[in-house]
Each structure stands twice: as C-alpha cells, then as structure tokens.
Length: 221
Image 1 (spheres, rainbow, N blue to C red):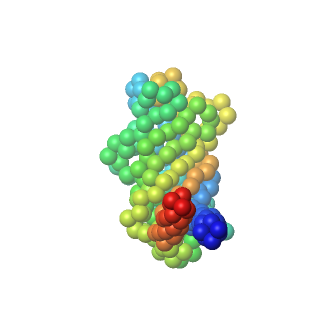
Image 2: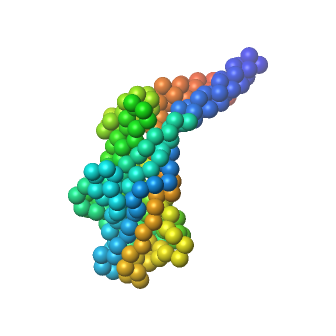
Image 3: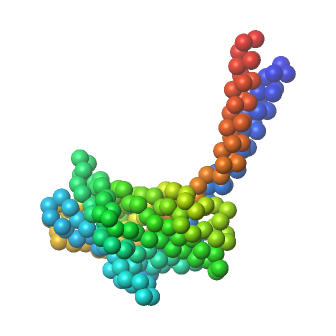
C-alpha cells in the first residue's frame, strides 16, 4: 500500500511540474505590421520571389510594427539583405518550399533598453487562403534585459508568421503557378517561441524516471 501511495504522490508531483514547464515556454508575439508590405512575385512557372516593400528608417526592404512579450510592448523590424527568398511548388498544392536563395532575413525587437535580434531561416509556406502562413526558425544573435532569461545567443527557435492578403487578391499559389504576376499583403500575426529551460526539462525527466522506477518495483511485487 505504501508503495502505491508513493507512486501516486510521484505522479502528482510530475503533473505539477508540467504547468511550470509550460509557463517557461514564453513567446514573442508579433503584431500586425504598420509599415511596409510583403510581396510575392512570379519568377517563372513554379517559382515566386518573396520581398519586402518599405523601409524602417534608413533600412530598405523592411517591414515594421508592434510586438509583445507578456504584457510588455515594443517595436519590431524585419528586413531582407542580399537575395530575396524563393518559393517553389511541392507535391502538395497548398504547401510551398522556401529557399533563402543566399539572402538573409533579419529580425529585431526592442522593449525599452532590452533588445532581441536574430536571423530567420524560412522553410515552408502554407497557402490556400488569404492568410498564408510562413514557418521557419530564428537563430538568436542578441538577447539582453528581459529577453536574456528566455533566449540565449545561439539558440535556434521556432518561428511562424501569417500574411494578410486584401480581399480579392490572388493567393500565393496562384502567383507561384504563373496564374498571377504578383500579390502582396501585410504581416498580421506571428510568434517566436522561447527555448525550453534546461532546468524544467531536467525536473520533468527526473519525475518520469522516479515514476517509472516505482511502477516497475510495484509490478515485480
């Protein structure tokens, strides 16, 4: 009986750890862009280029807007240097692969004196609606102040963005297939997920190990 009680207590402890780990998964929420736009231009049947139209101060090929970390708000800039990313058709009619084409997509976000920056590697665009979603990763290059506890320089973390195309605009897939010359819209939302904290992962791992050990002993008896 005592062993059974220990197993139950261990499982309860593990369940208490899960919300703690989830709470550590803080994210940067990207809000609608207030400056610049995202354009997709046909580059031949089966290919389209993604570019930014606009500037952020002296920076060209840029979009900007507001972003949030928890209840703290600040401004973000995203800009492309070098070549524009290319979208190519895949076996799925509404999924397109993104090739960075040797270019760099940069991201920066500041809240007061706290700064966050990185480079984005886009991988996939999901289409089929007037709100295509772009998926990829961000490699952290700057993380100070309130960002430092959640992202370390060198962390590679998931990122996604949704583009809002005006009603009646061609879908991105139509541009890729050559059915339209171009389409453009604004960033409507997005998120950059924080790297899981090693301490939380270790605690959950220890909890699972303890539960497994106790259950194994219980079954032997």
